[in-house]
Length: 181
Image 1: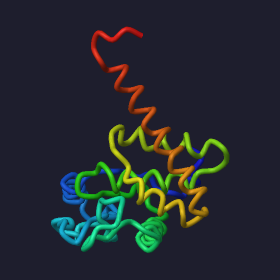
Image 2: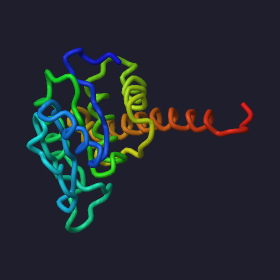
Image 3: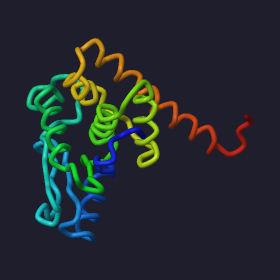
């Protein structure tokens, strides 16, 4: 990917795997946690080199009592990412590692990409480290809205999700036994 070499690599995961990683490598890994108020945090956040939390629910439309991803949460995620610069790897996790963390990683990778290949580069990079997931569309769009107007953000979001999904579909087709190509 055409990211600046100063940017760390992103390891996208769920909470249990993030807990295991910081336990195995105490005080070596910065961790960005995306969680709802009802989700637990890391078991022992003091084991992380740096632990940054953003409270955001895994929803795409407003729901009373829940935090829908919006600009403040997107800015907080990007701010947490900036605080991790200079590190070799950053653990980015949500509860299951399937929706919020995937959307955040896809947004970060795209926003730090360059040129016309940024969409495909972001999708490929994420797919290489996390080949399954269902990005939270609203969170991804909120991240893109920090740099683009809402209509542009929607178009880019659709392109990113389409590129990532196409890689998943291709992998699934190749892994189905007995399928004729």
